[in-house]
Every structure is written in structure tokens, then in C-alpha cells.
Image (cartoon, rainbow over all chains, first blue to last red; front, side, top):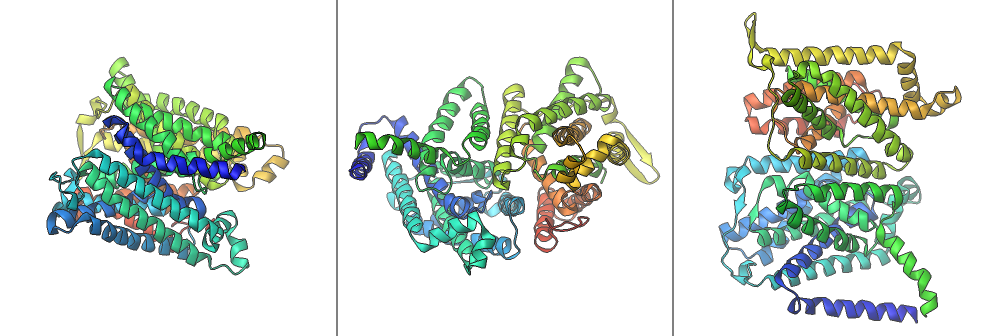
Length: 323
Length: 277
């Protein structure tokens, strides 16, 4: 009975999301677009960082590669970003494979793996800022033409739908994985890698697959980033702060759960956006990041598994009364 | 090259904290930036030269490190690495952006009477400020090793680093030792920050770059090794300036990151480390 209620509620919510833009003002549409997009990025990170427990702090590199690839293909070669996003995703996956291979083959764990991913993202950033053909440190700008075939839309609601589809797709992939042997292996690797190996699980292979899938999805997201903002600066696209933005959503919401990153994005993206909007007007730059930092500290100390598992338990405890 | 001394001091602080607690201080660079801003405040408000004020900066940062350890880090000393990393990331975010709130995004620079003068040392032309920064950094590192090897408190810090349980058994107050070690590590960057404040224009995001730079150095030199951190600082400074000369100034960090990746893959214990952890 309860299960049916939940399923019905989920379906109703899903059905409502596409309808919302017709009720919203343009600011709310922007806000939700960002929530969906960061939820998508957090979900992509979740595969390798949450399920497999390999803390990558360099996911900005994948996003940056995807963004630059799609933008360059579109502007220089006229190839539509609808194709370019997959090319970007593939290139990001190539980098992900390289990082994963080096990190996992050489057995880097914990802090060492974090640093390896950071180092690669920083190397990407430095190379991008020193390559004049892609705008160098000044950045790369896309001129707005409003041509839908080039992923440019007059109507902000189209971006809303694209971001929604991205988020739902990634979440679907993760929900599917979680039920398969692959997902179980990943969680097992996170919990106790040596025990996994002892049981004959090819941990290297599964960590590599998780890394490739995660970097591919993030790379695809890069195309959206490029054509939503129309400007790419190496410092912001490849920078460590962007990687932190991605990680923090998954962690606060609950890493290693299907709905955690989404919940995290619903909590943090509006916070970031509102803070940016209001605090910046009053000259209070950085206030939202102070809040982020405090939240991160609080989550680690008091809620190490994230918000979603706690929320789910609360709901479940109440459920028997209603059923 | 002369920057190397300050790099070394910064890395020595990080490696001390890691060596004792196995916790990586992600807020290291941000603590350094606070040291810089303190030096700046003292110079602009009180007219104190940073080359005298660094003592105050070190003391203030000692306090900050001590408190951060007591209130936050102590609770997660035994937690998984991921949790420690995330907690320190949170501290870094708070420190960096509190600086942004307090001092604004404009780059600052501390004026020192000494920063303008230069000196001919034989055939080489040397900045007096850089020379002093280098000298003080080296002296402070030496003092720190004297402290660790010759005093009771220093000995108990090393004992807790080598064998926490053993130190507990013989009656060391490990919690206090941890807090002091964190404080001393933070004091190192506080002093380092004040010493480079006249040489390096800084703004709040500088902290992140400095954190990453000190991770580089510590990994290259060997996590937890004081000598490694010291030599690593010199090495990275030399490698970066060579990179700046032979490639392009904006590419100099590429050299240290490539060095980092190579070390991570082939000698994760670092050049001077004893063994891989």
C-alpha cells in the first residue's frame, strides 16, 4: 500500500516537473534549470565518487573538455552540439580512462587519488589558458544566433527541459546500475576493496568502468554548460571550485544513493543562486561559499551519510501509520 | 630559488600536521592567506613592518590551528580519509570566503621599507626582501626541528606521530599533542604568509593555489618527512623558475604538476619519504 502511494507521488511529481515552466516566472525557470543541471553533474560524480568511493576532485576537467569540444565543433566546424556533446563526452571519457588507469593501476587511494585528479584538472586548466587558438586565459565566446540546431534557444524553457532530461537520464542510469551486479560491486569496493579482491571481483575493471561512465556523462554536461552560458573561461570551467560545487551536492544530499545528489542540488543550488543574487548586490561576495563550508563541516560531523538517507528513514518511520 | 625557503616553510607546516595526525590540511593555503592579511592589517593600520610582524602572525595562526583542531579535527581523526578531506575542504571554504567578506576581492600587497632595496652579492643581483624571507624561513625551519628533537613537547609530538597508541600508553596527553602540532603547523604558514606578503600580491582565492602548491611540494618531498618538505620546497621553486625561463611564465605550474604526477605514480612515498603509506 505504502509503496503504491510513493510510486504515485513520484509519478505525479515527474509529471508535474515538465508542466511547471508554464506557471513560473523566468527567474524560477533559471533556478530550476540550475538545480537540474547541478543535480545531473552530482549524479554523474556519484557513480565513481559515491558508489565506488573513489573521491575525484577533478571532475571539472571532464566538464571543461566536453564544453570546449562542443563549442569548438559548433563554432569552427559547424557541427551541431547535439552531436558534439557526445564527441565531448567521448573525449572526456578518454581522459577519465587515462586518469582512472593511472590512479587504479598504481594503487593510489584516498588523498593520493584526490591529488592525482586535481593535478590533471589543473594541467588541463593551464594548457587551456595557454592555448591561444581556444581563446587562452581570456576565454572562448560563442555568439548567440538563436539557432536550435546549434543548441541555442530564444526560449529559456528549452534549457529547462534539456537539463531536466539530463538529470532524469543520469538518475535512471544510476537507479538501473544500483540494481545490477555492477552497482553492487561498486558499493562493495567502496566498503572494503581488499575483501572484494579476495572474493575474486576484478575491482580494477569495475572502477575503470565507473570512471569512464562518470566522465562521459560529465563531458556531455559540458556541452550544456557551454551553450547555456555562451562563454568559457579556463579558470572557471576547469577550476577546482567547480569540482567542489559538484562534489558538495552529492555529499550533502547523500553520496552513493540514487536520489542523494538530486536532493543535494535542490538544497544547495537555490541557496547558491539566491545568495549570489542578494548578497552580491550588497557587496557580500563569498557569503554563500561560507555557508557551503559550514554546511559541509556540519554534514561531515553530524550527518556523514548525507541528507537523503536520513530523510528516507524519517519518512519510512512515519509510513506505517499512514498505510 | 629564494622563494623556495618560504615554500619550504609552508610545506613543513603541512607535513608536520599530516605526519602527526594523518590528516591533510586542505585549508593550509587559506590559513596562509589569513597570515598575509594579518601582516597587511598590521602594516597599514599600525605601521608594523611584516618582517617584524611575522611573529604575531605566527602566534595568531597557532591559535587558529589549535582551535580548529580542538573543535573540529579532533572529532574525525579516526574517521575515513574521505570524511577528513571533506571536513578540511569545508574549513578551507569558510576561511577563504570569510577573507573575501572581510577584505574584498581586490589584490593587496604589503609595503615594506626593505622590499625596495636590492643588493649585489658578488655577480648576482638580489632582492633584499627575498633574501630576508629566505633567511627567516630557513631559521624558522631549523628552530622547528630543534623544538621537535630537543624539547619534551617536541619529543611527545614525534612519539604520537610514530606510534599513537604507544604514546597513549606511556601517559602522553595525545589530544593536547595533536592540538599543539596542528597549531605549530598553522603557525608555520602564518609566518610564511607574512614573509611573502611584501613580495606576492594576494587576494582570497590565492589560498587555493597555495594549498595546491604545498600539496605538490609535500608529495614530491615525501608525506610526513620534514627534510622532504624542506628540500621539496627548494626543488619546486627551482623547477618552476626554470620552467618560467625556458617555457613561458604562465606555464611554470605545469612543470610542478607534471613532476607531481610522475612522483605519485612512480614513487608515492616521495623523494625523501621512508615508505608508502
